[in-house]
Length: 288
View 1 (cartoon, one colour):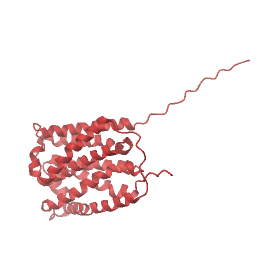
View 2: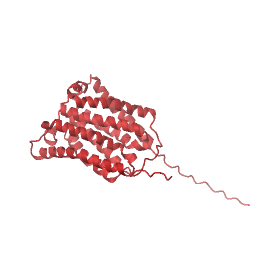
View 3: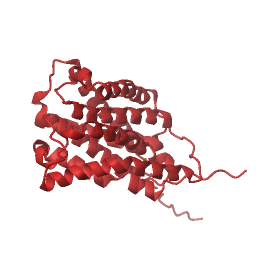
């Protein structure tokens, strides 16, 4: 019986679904024009820290998408798709729940951005589903696992999943109830947007545990510290609204620290040793 060839990561899935350009644009608007969302975003986000954190998540997701798009095999790139699979439909639901909060009656650039958002999140989940079905129909299998994740790394990821998933459910289902648990004041629409990211990152951590192989999750491990850096920049710029006396603030800090732990392991685990240079041996002339 001939071995099954590895399933390739289709070009359509890597470009059309991963869609780093759209994520990058939204992330740049939120992260760079943080205090001007009344004009340069689909809805006004206050306080600015919320916009910066959402922007950091979009930019971190963009990096993950770009890194995954370079992988030739489905097994090595599919972990990035879990973020989109979870985030997109939840964010779409939040959009239509709070449709009246959006800048629907604006003009100029604000109107363009608002309708870009509405069209993108109206179509993106459908596009994602169609391309995913096509990807799954491609023949092939998964290469064997060669470098399982150590217990400590799986434990960190398990904590991510155990905290982020139930928190995300509560934040989306009952944003008013979840508000006291968040380390700064967040309105309902922004709370549900943060919930979508919480659920996406929770599923991402769970997916990484299931994959349990460095080659399959390396793009996530590489992306975690960049996400942490972006969040720290957001805190430095707008962290005055954080209620540091609340447990939620220190849970947030613990999450950021863990991104660097995961990133450090990822860099170490994927570093390939340089081949040793051969040292020429001096030739000794022998005379009979």
